[in-house]
Length: 232
Ligand code: FES
Image (cartoon, rainbow, N blue to C red; front, top):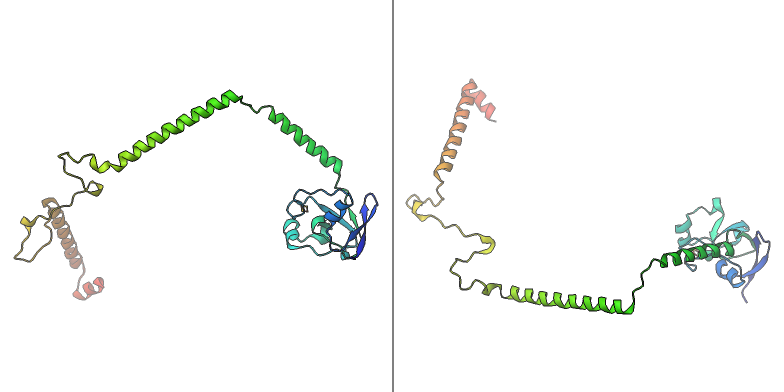
């Protein structure tokens, strides 16, 4: 038979026995002592917090889940989660924050609020529901027919302009540019595409400007040596 330890409950002063290895939430609830809990003992709600008044050496250390929820502050707050605490000796704990009557009243208020909300919910009658269902079914059927028709048109898009005389466009509406062979000088072995007169003029102007600038730079530099230095 497993060991049992004495737990003194504050503020009532009641003394209960708790089995070794059983957490305080389960052990106290079994003895009909109310401890609030929303997560069912999974260390996620922190509703089951209680305060250790004495015997802090006789409780099991907090597991990782509890530390994650409350932080490593037991030495300051003396608070533990009942669902994560087992005993190794006699202790005194404060459960004054757990009051069944207060919690039940809070719950009742919530229920009242909910029922108030409920009054605004519109409840449809059977014939209305049937009418809406028929309308929606019709809409869906219409949509399906439209989609099918669209799919058929898409499938046959290549047949649409089969008989038309207009030349077919290539992808992206671009036509390949043909190479103008009349202007190619085969004797010179020059296959570069000749520039248009405007572009040729722009190129000539640019080259002339560059030549003049170079000549001017050269003039401004007194000796060849200096010029070389400048070029470097
Ligand atoms: S019951 Fe929720 S944290 Fe203990």
